[in-house]
Length: 96
Image (cartoon, rainbow, N blue to C red):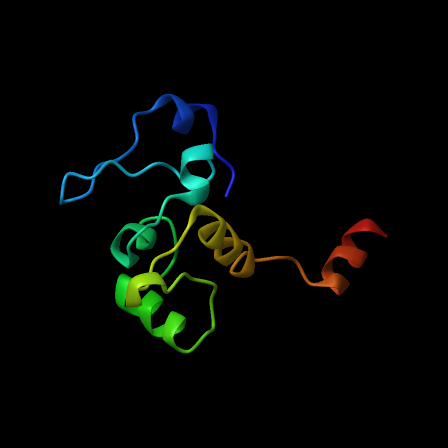
């Protein structure tokens, strides 16, 4: 998940609990543990869907202290997994 210059200049968002949440692509976000609610703001799924996918081992996550959390690395990996890419045939037709 690339961070634009505008994102880097903006202050990190705050959650309902008042906790400051760094962006996943920043150095602080690499090792920050996001709750499913916080991670859902960066991913195409709700917090409940993220929890369910984590319990089924469909997406990377951390389960330390018996709680599902996501690091910035996990969020970036999930984002890459869900990225839409062109079909190989479509790319070949366009180039040739």
